[in-house]
Image (cartoon, rainbow, N blue to C red; front, side):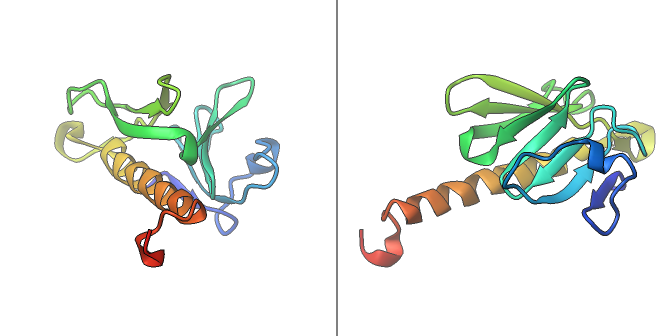
Length: 137
């Protein structure tokens, strides 16, 4: 994804103004508009943090139930559709398209990343709760 920047190595100039939630470490930032804070997505060690204009919305991996893309038509897909454990739905813009006629979208790669993150957080929670197969339970 060419509009992804790792933090702190490639931090954009506006990054300090975003206000990453306390206790979290920023790992990277996805820019929907290159070099712009508008609708950017900060990836932390615990959440996706989405610029909503007036605030940074935190969407925690351990509160997520599943992820897919929206709208459903692959040619139109431009956001993550995240179903939360409380049954609410959050939308995260991931608009960059590439390839012939904009055939491919970053949204599909982002879905795979978030899906894996949800799985990893579930595994960590199970281990913390003593439900890991490693300890015989």
